[in-house]
Image (cartoon, rainbow, N blue to C red; front, side, top):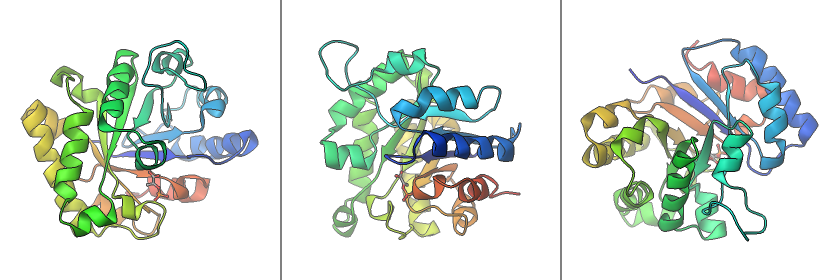
Length: 251
Ligand code: PEP
């Protein structure tokens, strides 16, 4: 049985006061619940304050990105070792916004995944097709490539530290959520890809989140889909009541 994993990706939003207000409320809502895993991914600069504010809470804290280098002359970058040094638990990698806006290739994503795992960070690896790719019947090819190339060279022994987020690009921030059938089809496909890559034990253990316009009103329906093990949430994670309601989908 895979424990549901609900993670909020704050992207380029909130200020420090808003971030602390949000996590203060979330901390109370989540309490010491152990039936779900809950995580937040604030902008880099708020990570130390959020980590401090969540000390003693089971809510995990992670970054939205990291460098594909260990150290050196890479102005503006933040290394995985720096994130683990300040107490981050995980990092989101391969988000479609990183791929589309910042030109991240699967090769770059793979370098980051390796460095993150080396640094002791868990990874949420995003995979998902654009609308054009879906309409061209390329969904499986695209998510297959995101997984196979993103996870290339990573030993099955590390699989328990990896979560996959299936995020159809056409559903991110659009309000156009995938149907349970669409999500279920891709999640089943992705689990098969993981089985081919790392074997059946790993494939049965790894959590695959759905991401794309998840809201309190649709989360229960999505979470009821076989193989959907959680959600990666953008817009609806910026408000304590709405993310709290998503986290409480099963109560
Ligand atoms: C995301 O950015 O990962 C995301 C799923 O965003 P939203 O929930 O706003 O669609």
